[in-house]
Amino acid sequence: MKSIIKTAKQFAINGSIASIEPYGNGHINTTFLITTDTDSQYILQKINTSVFKDPYQLMDNIVRVTTYLKNQVASRGGDPDREVLGIVPTVEGDSYTVQDNSAWRLLTFVKDSITFQVIDDPKNFYYAGKAFGNFTSQLDQFPADTLFETIKNFHNTPSRYKDFEAAVERNASGKAADVCDEIEFVRQRKDFCSLFTDKIKDGSLPLRVTHNDTKLNNVLFDKHTKLPVAVIDLDTVMPGLSLYDFGDAIRFGTNPADEDEKDLSKVFCDLELFEAFTRGYLEACGNLLCPEELEMLPYAGKMLTLECGMRFLADHIAGDVYFKIHRENHNLDRARTQFKMVKDMEEKHDQLTEIVQRLIKEIL
Ligand SMILES: Nc1ncnc2c1ncn2[C@@H]1O[C@H](COP(=O)(O)OP(=O)(O)O)[C@@H](O)[C@H]1O
Ligand SMILES: [Mg+2]
Image (cartoon, rainbow, N blue to C red):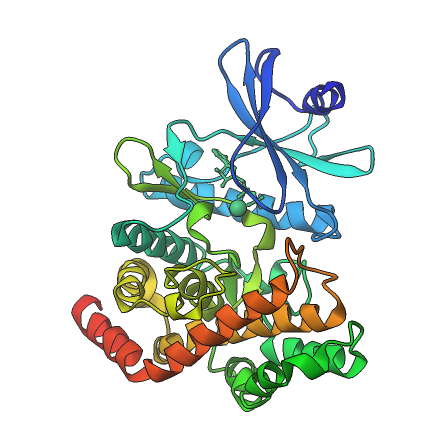
């Protein structure tokens, strides 16, 4: 705790530290809530540098994007201090500090805010769609190609496919022979993997600023009104496709079961939830998406889910080196839920398309 206090003192905080406690349910960074004797509150985070290798580039992206967002929110009469993640500089004016080989940052704490871990009311998923759609809308004119690509090829599905084949070839765990059906499932969809990247190459899908971690618990909601306040967790902000943000939200959010559920009968794409998120998203940013982006929306969930599934399967075959496991075959179980989702989305493709088309007509 002493060293955490020492770290916190590197930042330009208001008052003296009265308490520091672990906070939130994040899985990537280590998060603390700091309260001072003047009743100011902050979020202190140790950045996970095994995932994010270059904290300088990561923080540079975040500072530039949040500065831009604050101007946008202010010019529309909103409250930039509440609606946009605030970065508190160090006493030397830097956006983060390095202590004992770890990078730390301080954020302003959004008071009276809550996060939801699971979707027990489709309305919350609708609001998440609005919040992430707003994020896209506010950053529409930001020059995406000036941001650092902090994790190379993050959602480049053909590149993920290559990594997957390399893992099968190497077969470090010796388990490849036991998962032939799963390997075949991915291989049958090889051509599909390049659907979006081909459209980036021919210029029909534009690069945008994307959030890349569009989970429900990365939206802060107001404790009282239950309305969305701010999009947080901007570590993976990078140049990308709107379809990545939309698709990843659909991947995790429309499955009513856990990501590692063993009973696959519980795993499916819930159409009511799909409609809720899509409605919120289109209300917020549908008017600025180009025809090709709108056309591809029904494929986005499948793309991101297939990509995620092949990463889990590749890691299982590689001997569980990237995703932490808590039981035997954990990554295989995770891969299987993703593939079940992919299959269900394929079977429901016409319904997904119908929902998207109907909402486009209704909203745009
Ligand atoms: N500025 C903030 N104000 C209030 N709560 C926050 C703030 N930033 C993070 N949190 C809380 O901490 C949790 C973890 O933070 P997050 O940045 O999402 O880290 P991770 O990458 O580990 O998910 C969030 O889900 C939220 O509950
Ligand atoms: Mg988070």
